[in-house]
Amino acid sequence: MKINLPDSIEQLRESKWLSITLQTSILGLNFLLISQKIINSYILISVCIVFSLFLLQSVHHRFIYFNPVNQHIQVRTPHFDTFLLYLFTFLAGGFLFLGISSYYDIEPLSYYDEYLQDYILWIFGVLSIILPLFFYFYGRSLITRLITKKIKSKKLTYQTVCNDCGKEGAIYEHIVLDWNDLRVRKTCQNCNEGKTKEYTTNARIG
Image (cartoon, rainbow, N blue to C red; front, side):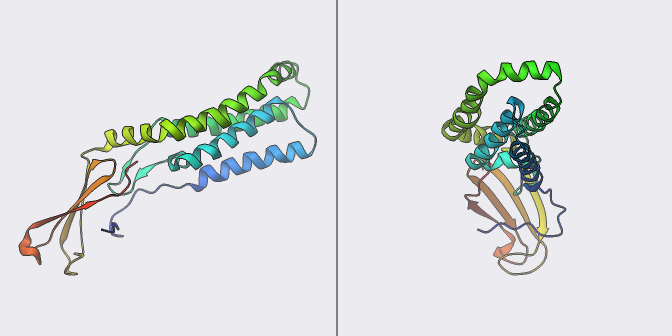
């Protein structure tokens, strides 16, 4: 069954463009600095963090959204993956700022720049290889379980046109029972003798 919420409902929206725009801007500024021969540990770490975010987003779509929403029941679903997106975006921007500041030979920054040079490959390995692989093999199911637990048994009820008879006044109810089980119950006084009809869907919850 295709699920479309009516326009009459003031729906919660999730936008992926803000995070993608921020990441692309930070990465572009980093490469601009590198092209101008301005390279230091902070800039390289900033690139590693953004690259890690892109890899995480390819593993699970939730790493794209600053404001994740379950569209089927209109419930906000932020969790630790949302926190990681905020944290990594902030750190990528912060290290970019430190990289620009380090260009002006600020002594503490120059000291830590030399110190971090020994750990760049380790940082790259953890952020761009180990972390994405962890989420690929274990994190996706973990996120799905946590989100399902958060919204299980939550409902969305609304009134709209009946899918079967096309008349106004049908009452629909969406209920989350499991990660791949969204039940849709419809009650229409104009068809099916006014009895409630239940549909089983395999809509993705996580």
